[in-house]
Amino acid sequence: MEASRKPFFPPDVIVPMKETNHKWIYATSDTHENLDDIDPSTIGKWLLFYDNVNICEARGMTQHDYAWPCIKKLVEDDVLFCAKCSTACDNEPEKSMGVICCYTQNYLDKKDVKRAADAIRQAVHFPWDMFYKTDNDTRAGKYRYTGSKFISIYKHTIENKMYERDGVLKYKWHEITF
Image 1 (cartoon, one colour):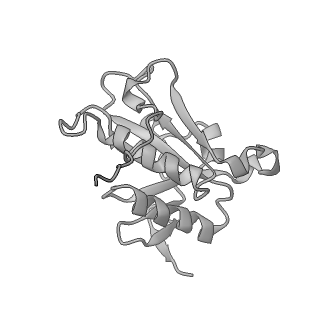
Image 2 (image 1 turned 45 degrees about the horizontal axis):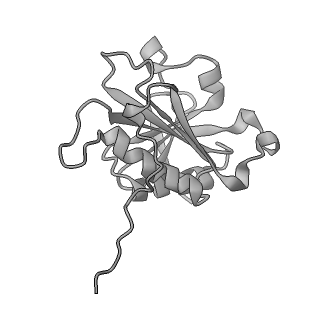
């Protein structure tokens, strides 16, 4: 008797680097459809930068394409309240990295921010430090590519440790322990 196998990803998943009509793909938790209850000034996100050019022959997808369904599943399972993923739409040829933004509701809730980071690390292969940025900084136009420095307030390491940026010596990080 042959067991039926479910595909790893649902068949309706949009592949980011094949999407050319929308700049972003979004995933929002059913539990958090009403964003009116969330204070926009406390929202922040973990930023995952992945190669969006080199296609794996075995999978037929880039690292960026492969990571998105895993992050989307975290949203569907209410681990993250929402996420968005850059696409091939308006992708500049010299940009070899795509970004996936994994949102938390309140960057002041460090336990929740770390919980989200730990879950992301468990769901996807990301062998570098992850950095966390507030939406306030995004709205203020702070980006590394425009020359802004020391934007991220938290970083999460592959050892599942979370650090907070020093308030005075911006290049220093302090481990957060709970």
